[in-house]
Image 1 (cartoon, one colour):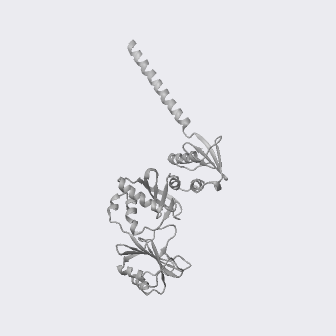
Image 2 (image 1 turned 30 degrees about the horizontal axis):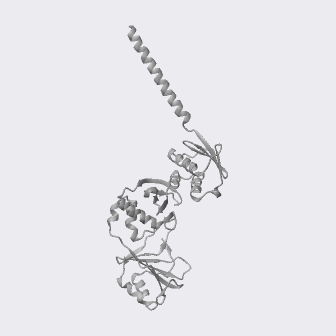
Image 3 (image 1 turned 90 degrees about the horizontal axis):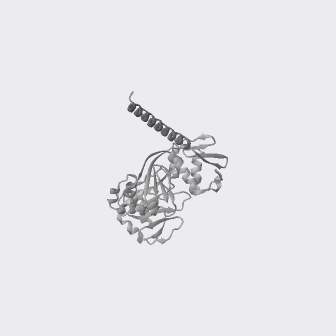
Length: 323
């Protein structure tokens, strides 16, 4: 064999050797660092061992994806200080959002439920047990279409996730609508979609800003009866002469379906009755004039109001029935 050929063979062998060594070292490094133990969390009578890629609850791997493990680790790092690889907490001392996350792990709820609870947000809307709508930093709106378990108590599956991609103007319109809903709480559960908000809801759940091009429908009046020891129906009148009559209740935040129809604009004449007073009196009909921010109370003997309600077949002095 020629001397030059021997040198080439020796060079190829050397290169192969170092290549194999490099691959081996990379593999060893990966295996040594994969699944690195981080710390223990003791919560009441349970222990969660936290690794870089898994969570072990009382000795059992709960099977979370690495993405959700990282969500949990981020939660711990943002809210607690771990000393000597140990964190001890009491569930009674946790705020509600963090408690729900720990509860989801300890109860071994579906991983989708943890994912829903662990999403970072400024405000969140749970809609009809089918959608979770997050208002996040910088007015970003994120939507998750979900499936509930058979008891409608936990999220069993996340069907899809998307962020709204609207023009700046339409995105702001959606944000303004959501902020009106969040005026009383950062987390709300909604089981009624009123006619005057349908365009906003459709644009969000279908990720289609063209719904916002539809003409707005505005709420004019709200009719209720005050005088029963049970929840009673509500009648909503809109400025396009349509009405919605909600007379049912549903369990587990299911979407309520109203009776709808048209009303005679002569309803304005009711406001001129002599029986009218201001405020809300017990055992009376109460009408809220939404656009003028006024409230009127009518005696139950009001013939004009009774005739109007009978014409629409929308009794108010009854208890709600289950849908």
